[in-house]
Amino acid sequence: MEATDKVAVITGASSGIGRQSALVLLEAGYSVVLAGRRAELLDSAIEEAGAPAGKALAVPTDVSDIDSIKNLFAKTVETFGRLDLLFNNAGQFSPRDPLEDLTVEQWTTVVNVNLNGVFYCTQEAFKIMKSQTPMGGRIINNGSISAHAPRPNSAPYTATKHAVTGLTKASALDGRKYDIAVCQIDIGNAATERTAARGGNEQPNGQFIEEPKMTARQSGEAILYMDSLPLWANVQFMTIMATKMPFIGRG
Image (cartoon, rainbow, N blue to C red; front, top):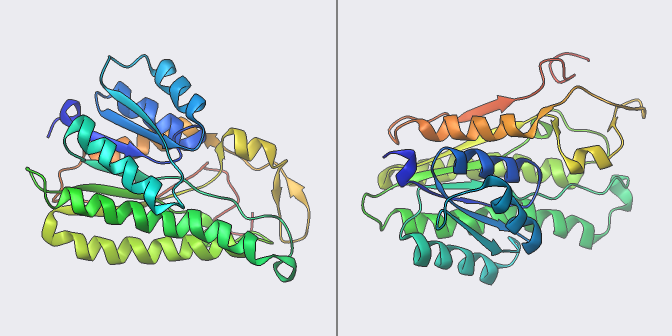
């Protein structure tokens, strides 16, 4: 299927990696549904893209709310008739509080966004992709290298990103019979509004340092590559990061 015929849904599309991914896909000719909590930022992303009329749709969405998710996918099918790509990108960082001081609410907030939201979206995408003609599609989950090398005081975030990897593997297996290719991108430091606001990265010795970053757009270009493959081929796991980021080795 040509890119100009494909329909994509991107969660967390109001800023950062999600926004840049939406811009990249729109430039490539996709029809894109931008989902996020801040309607004004979704609209500004569409305006920034300068997409042709009818190629982009903003749907304010809370991925932790199943009814909001159902509305997102119903509007996608109502508007574009099918779904070819889902990028499960919406995510919630952990508070920097010590593990023993985290509240139940802080824990469940991260779980509801980072894990439950990915499951809800994947489930709705499966229902559409297995029923459409031609059948199938691709689902890309935004994991994190934090699942492999956690930072201090990151238990909720790290745990949910481990869980996303398990969900990626399970749904990849379950999607085979429907020509649904499920995969994961693990993204290192990307320059976004959110990472800039964190004031550097905490190290195991307690210091905060500015680590090398890549651009958020480069993550979007990686998403485009992963989806450029035919459905019978899949980049099961991709890690993309700044070459000099202290992830491999001791830093």
